[in-house]
Amino acid sequence: MTVILSSAFLAFFKLFPILNPPAMSPVFYEITAGVTDRQRNLIAFDVSRYTFFLLVSLLLIGGWLLKILGVSIDMIGIAGGMLLFHTAWAMLNRNDRLTHSQKQEIESVLGKEFFPLTMPMTAGPGAIAVTLAMVPSSSILEKASIFHVIGTCIGIAIAAATVWVFYRFSGAFISRLGENGKATIGQISAFLLLAIGIQLTWKSLSNLIRTL
Image 1 (cartoon, rainbow, N blue to C red):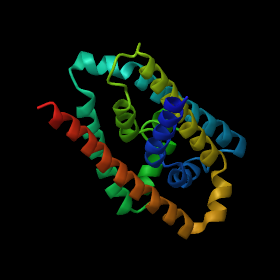
Image 2 (image 1 turned 30 degrees about the vertical axis):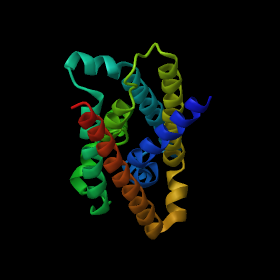
Image 3 (image 1 turned 90 degrees about the vertical axis):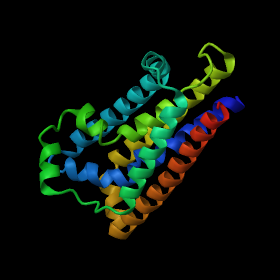
Image 4 (image 1 turned 60 degrees about the vertical axis):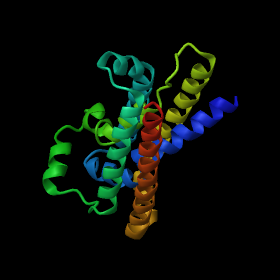
């Protein structure tokens, strides 16, 4: 039970900053401004559901794919950490407002909840890299690996549920937070993501150095 809880806790806190539903909910609300509240609620549920299925599928079959491609988990960890660092740095220095052309591009595919609302807007390359980095390095049939996978799936489910909560109630959140609140949450999330990116890169690099 301890392994399951710790894996769930770690998975959630690795994924939540990069999924970043507090910062992405204003974007989601702006993109879906032309639909009814009921339609927006259904879209929010579908995006959350697709996020869960996408990341769990990567967790379960990602190890096999990496073996076929000849890529180690630590290499994915380094790449994912660098990508997280780049994403976080861009978040710390970006303008959160969508340009007119960006909004038009996404609005043209409303109704396609998987693409682009789930991938890449919600579960983009960063979330994919982090999930692949959580694939157990030992055999999936070992008891410890099974508990790790179960816990990680629970963490992914909780992270996906927060996507639904923030997207579902995006209008209420935005009206209460105001511009300063949204900016503050976005900056805090970016800073946490920056720290996770550094930690993931360092841990994976250390593992590779020890094998030399």
